[in-house]
Every structure is written in structure tokens, then in C-alpha cells.
Length: 430
Image (cartoon, rainbow, N blue to C red):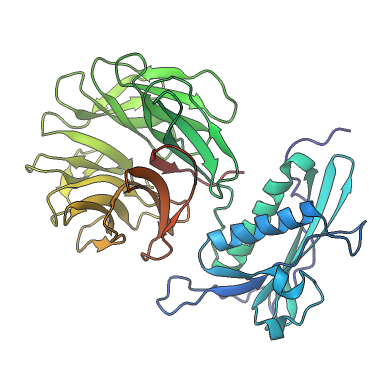
């Protein structure tokens, strides 16, 4: 019987996780947002093929690196290089100074691979939990990343983001810009569009399967939608004369808010996924662009220059009541509402450069996250609301970078040719 390309989880959980004294006892999670928090040292010994004891090949090293990199991507874990202890599972972990170790054994049978993972709490001297995964060889990376996200959940109470993706616009040969999607570790970068024109501002649907974006290839900035995973034909859903910009999916995935200039002034409209206008949300009150939904679907945040310069506003979609939340600076743009609803990230002009700020939805004093003498634009939140991806304009190049919500961990994600811009972080994928 051929094995379907899914990860078989039901009934395959490894019953190795030792229970606490009482099943009713609450788990104590790491507070990784505490100012004094230090990174948790991990050991990830080399993956080991049960059928080849004592033999480590390149595939084992690659899988070990994948899990290590995925753990460190979350920002609060540091993995001790396995070269320091020869990657051996028979190591004095206390002497090595690690808090947790992950032991991985696997076996293959034809096109099938089976993993057995164990997370060991070194200070307690016990297995914290274990998992078994079984699937086809071509999804082995997905199984490893799924376990990584389970580890993050065990430590923090929230599942990790290893299985999320980032969409962005990137230059290609010929001077065009097309839409790309990459996993967060930058190992699998795919070109999604081939319009041979300017394609920008990709936005994932709430389930992460669809992409909406704007392309100028017909000579007008029209809005398109595509199933990026299945490489199906892209279809236009909004091609009114003038602007069809900045799509923002509603949390239930049934509607979008976009900017249209079909009635002269750039205003916000609510449309369905077929492009039918359901409601006009703003009318002739300055330029209104860059909408982003609140997680509960009741409000949107957007940019308007109705006060004389671009500022961030919040609108109740049902009543259309609007309030301004930014008052510091005279150019604040591109708001992005965090998935947990607690923050709005945006790009604000400060001392001649655009920097990333975050502010509470009710307003108040914004927090500045970036400080380099570069422009930082187009912020988008990770699905756990702990990181922000954005475009950095540095030395005449535009690149995709991330930073943690507390302003630490600045890094460039992808090292590819050409300029990259307008990144968008997906939800967690299965």
C-alpha cells in the first residue's frame, strides 16, 4: 500500500514522555519575554540510523543541522555545536552545560522513514517528552520541523513557527519583479509569478494556501490571487481602472479590504474573493491605504493623510468609526496587526530614516525597534507574534530581515541576488 504524503500523527505519539507528579499539575513554561532571560543551551547530537549503529553520514549531519537551525531560529535557544562533543549521545550533558538534549533515532524502509525523538531535561535527569513520526522520505524535513515546533510548545506553551513561510517581491533577470515564497530558514525559495512586470505586496490567506498580490503587467495595477502551492493559473479578482492595491484578507478568509481609486480618490473597499465590492469603508477623507485586520475581525488599521500627513488609524468595520493612534512623527505608514492582537507594527520616519515601531492598538507611546541608519519598511508579524519581518534598504540594496519584538536579534534572512521587498509572514502550515 502506497504511503500518502502526510505525517501520520494519530496513534503514533511515542509514550516516552514522563508525566509530572499529578496530571492536574500545571506546566511551568519559560518566560522568554523577561528582560533578564538568557538563551537556553541545547544539545542536538547527530541523528542516528538504527540500522547503521555508529555510522554517521552526510544525511545525518544535514538533518541534525536542520533541527538545530530551526530551534535557534526561535531566538531563545542556543545549540552547542555537536563537534564539541563529537556529536555523541553518550555525553556528560551536565559537564557540557546544557539544559536540554534531543536524542533522535530513525530507520528507513524503502521510501518510508520513521523517527523517534526524545527531549531530555538534563537538570531533572528525565525524558520530558517523546514523539514518533512516520512518513515518506520526501517529507522528512517537515517531520523534523514539526518536532521542533513541539519542543517550542513544551517550553513556552505556544507552538513554534518552523513550518511557516515568507512571501516577498524580488528582482529577476530583465529588471522585473516577481513574487516568491520561501520557508523561514531560506532553504526552499520558489518563484510564484512570471508576469515579467512589477508584482508587489503579496498577502497570504489565513490558511496560508492562497496569495493575493498586485501586478502591473497589463498596464494597470490589478489585484490577483493564486494557489501558490499547486502552481495553478493566477486569476485577476480586481481590475478596476486605477489602483487595485494592498490586499488584506479578513481573518475568516472570505473577504478582503483593498485600496481602489476607481472613484478618483484612493479609498478602502471591502470585496469578496471574486472581486465584488461589498462596502466602501472610506470616502474622500484623504488618501487611505495599507489596511491590516485585527485578529478578531472587528477592526482594521490603515494609513490616511486626512490630518495632513500619513498617520495610523483604526476603524471599526461595522460602524466605520475611526480613531487615530499615532501622533509622534509626521510620516507613519504600513501598519501590521500582530496575530495575538496586542501590537501594531509600522514604519515611521525618524531623523530622516524609516524605522520599525510597535504601538498598542489603543495608542500611547510607540516603541522603536530598529536604529540603523537605513530605511526599514513593510513590517509583517510572525504567527507567534514574537518576530517581525521587514525590508531593509542598505547600501543601495533591499533585503528581507527580521527582528524580535523586544528589538533584539536583527538578522538578514535570505542571501539572494537582486532587491527584495514587501515581505509577508504566513500562518503556521501543516
